[in-house]
Length: 176
Image (cartoon, rainbow, N blue to C red; front, top):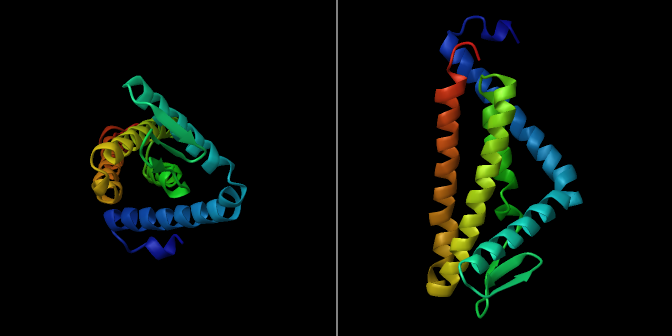
């Protein structure tokens, strides 16, 4: 492997190694998720249950009468929102953590930053679901658009901002 990168400049070497690490982590995530986590279902169910309860609690706090069903939550009188495995945030946690892991930086800081980042991503996801439940109440015809585009873009922009913070505050600093 060393001889493969011998004649490449430092920046290109960094990019090549970064891409190889990214691909490796993606394959590792795919193998772990598809062969263990998905089949077991515990993590997906745990996250969905927490999202339902948290979304319900916030809607109740702001004065709505709410219904909960194993993987759905909403304001009474509406169909609410269904929370499937793709929407529970687990893949976003993995994407975020993977990027931080493959970028340079102190491992202790990485663990702390990943933990805080995942917590914030989860909180953003809860508020996304609250907003979607309210969209169902006030503008149900726009639910699909908001689910697919508006809130997806907002969540990915938030994750991108976290990445930028990591790169600028931690990864590119000397003496990490």
